[in-house]
Length: 363
Image 1 (cartoon, rainbow, N blue to C red):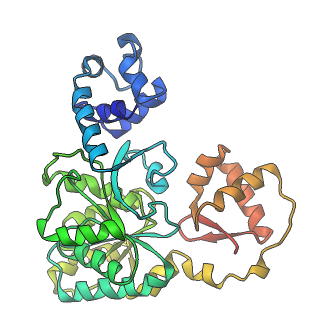
Image 2 (image 1 turned 120 degrees about the vertical axis):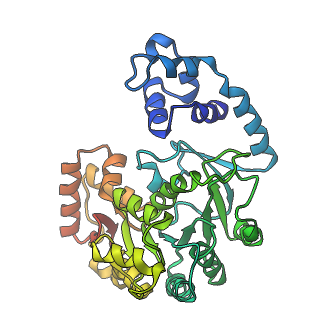
């Protein structure tokens, strides 16, 4: 099964969106390769050229080689239909169909923050990064970044120093570390976090890989925090992707004369990002402060719930806060019905509404 999943991702012209469509139509990745051409041609977006590529099955040999690498290096594979695939990323249409992972962090942690910024970080940026993570330490946050120079490195190091798990999302395969100067840092992260990528072994860190990997950084988190960014660059790409995924985006302001604060200042000026001066701003924006202040007496105990209410309550028990679209997806109820039930549960004192159309059970 895994060989076919890997192989599907190797076919030229079939990205993650098309791959998911093929799997949905055929039933599995293996079934895609065994499907008749006449049936493949009936699938929207799959023409004669792509159907020939699928049926040639030339990619399966390379996929078999990758299976050997995975087994030898004890790499965990995360298929997008698996329970342990990052559930926040699962609901992003262009999320990878398969991820490769080494580490011990729980990718579905209740609280996940992505911190990104320029590779040319200033002392101000590094200090702000450290202070933000120090302020989040008691909330047991999973810190995600890209293992690049600058703010990424500062974020990973600060997380380790504050006993938080941290995950680096790579723009290459797990057979190498880029930049090489972060190899020691990466090894530490394997024991207190992990390394995650969508790329096969042997994939070199080409510059076009990094903007693509940024969708993983944005998609697997509750919020994207930009600490320092010039007027253009990968951090701003990540912020824009986060906005498209309906994630909270926040930015640390800086001097108007600083080149490496222009991007952050513009995000704030355009109302694309909430202004962040301290960890308290992140905690407030994400509603974590309310979670801590919630008193158990606010919850109506031993209430009788309808079948639909019980379904939604059980979904909310899975994590600290949940987006309404995720509740709709998991409950298989119409979004209008989900909204009504959530309102009824709120009236009963069982559910809190958080910023960004997220919901949480009252503790």
